Length: 481
Image 1 (tube, rainbow, N blue to C red):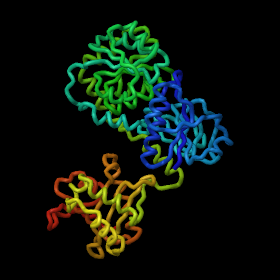
Image 2: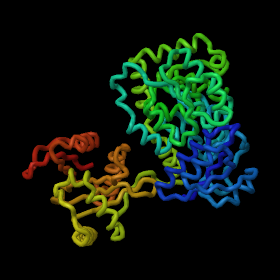
Image 3: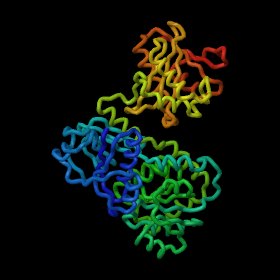
Image 4: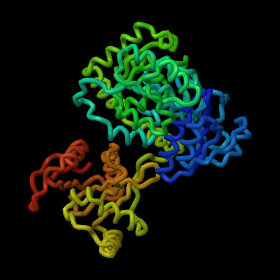
């Protein structure tokens, strides 16, 4: 699928829309989809992020029916408050990012990743698929990497080492200096502020003891090591929650207020109030931050709650919706082909795959290709490749033991592990196999002792324990349909 992402990034508007779009671009490229950005990127941080992503940027004129019809794309995703009108029906599938009422428009796929959006009424404007809630927040790979590097959410944390002040990618409203002063009055032992240009000079003038870090291209990694993060309540809220950073929030703009209130209510951040409260160093805001700095249990709760609420897989869920809106099954199995040989060999020889296999030796290429040729022509074997939105994510193989019993085995692609896909891969493989052999045969699964993940997978799919096989493997059986 060819994807165009319509967004801008400027010193005045910030880089939040761009960062969300870059997360979708990363996920699309992981699936082999060509992606380009349609818009203007003037903010220095935005330019660096786009350059690092290697993302082509195309100029954007007015988007109307004629302009959309000329686009060489299968999907047009709009993350821009200033684009108006219904753009559907002129060629590409139209996807729209909205934040409550901000940026709302009719689309084939609508995404509102605001926390709690799924509980709110949305006018019926004829939109197709509507994805609502923080589960659909598009987060970049850098966020998931920082999540893996972050401290144990429930680990000891007697006193935070610092307060990290991050007021968006551009600090368009000049809040960083006031936030640093508030942190100073709250008793922060060390204050670090991400700021550049005039914003950095204001920090140095107002809080000389603060450390100005300058522009940061990997804020998630920086936040993962911070004691407390003081942030604007924009798109960075979901990044911080996913990483597990104890966070204090400021509602800098009106379109941030809903997200701010819901984040505080959900227990993933402490609220310091609106912009005016921070600029005035309101005593209630100072007390709220001081309380967070002196309460290790509260910081641990914020880390744990945030990570549980935001898993970082929102971009993939959005892309799944694009794929499905085009009438395609998201997860589907197809017969394996000879051309799948190199890919299947790489999966088979992956160390984690070999650990859970009956035979744990590395398989030579020539032996593997001979085996694959034999399987593809053997009526007693069914080898299926399972694809998710068109990209291979695993295999399911069925071997006939007798007419009324087949053995199943499943392999996930190394890149597909840890994403909750095993159950869908197994179900897609079983469906395709049943369509071939009919409802009668039962299915046998053999699991190496100690492989708890496979036991959970098969039991959740309706398999029941059936004892220990002669080779010492645990067995599970699912009756014919």
